[in-house]
Length: 253
Length: 148
Image 1 (cartoon, rainbow over the protein chains, first blue to last red):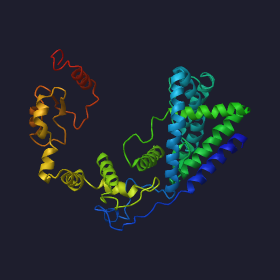
Image 2 (image 1 turned 90 degrees about the vertical axis):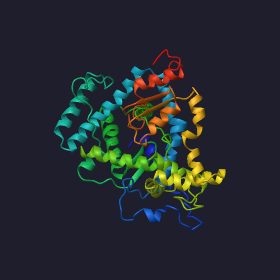
Image 3 (image 1 turned 135 degrees about the vertical axis):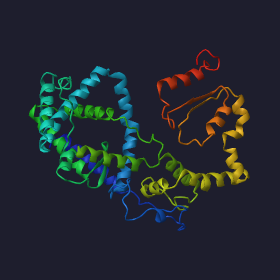
Image 4 (image 1 turned 120 degrees about the horizontal axis):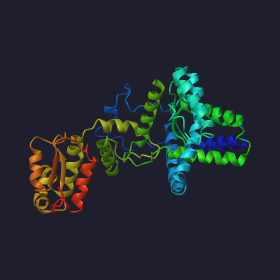
């Protein structure tokens, strides 16, 4: 593991530990039940659509708030500047470059899920975009009939029967669960450690910083979500439900 | 969903003890999942009868019926009928309409009511032609008769 990756891991661990030290919620001083009280209405043994296994909720909610602040103070201002000063064709090229690297990841995972069609599609996509598309800067494969067929390692695990596991809100990356976090780590290894090493793109530390910063900017630019804009006090619950169900759909297809 | 949001927030802001027991301290990490479930199972009419009407009867000294009447557009009928700043856009098949209500609404906005046959509840708000109509209204083109 490179020095850069160790630093990143250390940062993540520190943030996670900080989140653990949160004060537990205070119980009501007044024991008088509410008019429509939770104890009367919510059935203990029933699984509601909004229910997701979330044993680390306290930590996750802290991380959710941390991510919202990061969005407010860092990511969105950077994104605004990026969209204002970097011309569209360049942004598109950067986006294509990263999405081409993930095509490699998609190829490996399609194979691991024994999906011949997707493996061939993603493999040809990666090869044609890497060569004729000049390191993936131009997406010519979509026009050639090889569309992006996303398969990540979290989906591979799901395909082989691994359940969601506890819900986890990751620093910067947002909603996930134990299965998908494992998947992210493996996919990171496939692309960053294996592929970049193979093509000699991880020799220079300065370049790696640039690579990961641009990766983050591009990744955030792809997601239109903004924190606390849907006017609901239950945003955390809603995101948790949508993420979990969305991933189940992706695994099933 | 938006009704759940409204019920929960007005309860917490006013410490009503409606879904959340009175004087409960909610921190930024308190799980709201169970409250989301109870809010989801509390209807809009519960909110009106148990929060809205009691709150305004207490605040204004009116009776329940007076509060309900005062919440109706009919209570500002004279203003609505004479003000050309306000127009109405509605759909005949909107599920929140009671039978006969659309006629009543039309009478509140003489020459300023646009009723589409279909569109449900706000389903056609972003339809291009309808947006054009709204923009034309605010530009004064509808009332002056230059566009229709």
